[in-house]
Length: 289
Image (cartoon, rainbow, N blue to C red):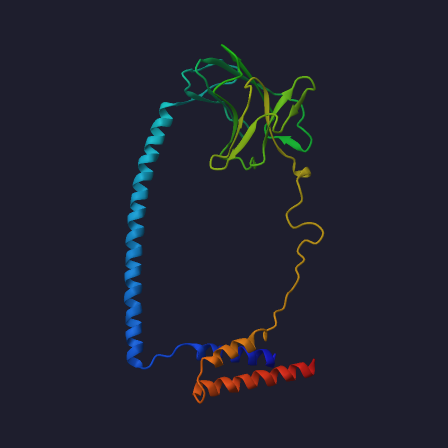
């Protein structure tokens, strides 16, 4: 410990000795004044530039946001519907979002866009088949989607969405949309169903599907089958402690400072004394070892 303390003290003193020393009080005042003026000018310029940039960005952002909102309103229709009731999906390649009554944890939604109109009906199956292994249904029902007026495939846009209720605490960030396979009477999940995306800002699971028609359900990982928490397992938390040698590089640092002190100066005398202290302490430490 004494050796380490001596080294720390020596390094601190050497660092101070290595700093350039002004010739007199006048030089100190002039240097400080010059630094203050430059720093002040730089800060003022930076603030002005940042303010101008922020103002321009805010104005451009507001204008772009307004135009985007207007364009969205012109090309998108949102409507509500009841289960087991036929509703019309307009054509003209205008996006139509149809939301159904909220369930236990969320809302079922159908997104449609196509040049020609269609008719849509969604009914609840209150006795759906079991969930895929490792998952559980987020709702006690599944949703049967029917479509009339033309094909349910090859549409400009076809999505099945699930929006979590505001008062629900269920985590749907890892939820999966499932579609009933009529041949096996079981729900299938995965990439074969469609491309899913979780929108955190709206707590919404949106999935692009090839065909809107079918029986759909939403599943979340079963807690019993969840993966172990991060850090659990063999070797978790083990760390290798590395102790640095405080004397490493001390001699090189002192030598570099000594090179900057001329012979016969107070600086050189101080440095020579510290170098002797370091050498003596190192020898004592080696003898004890």
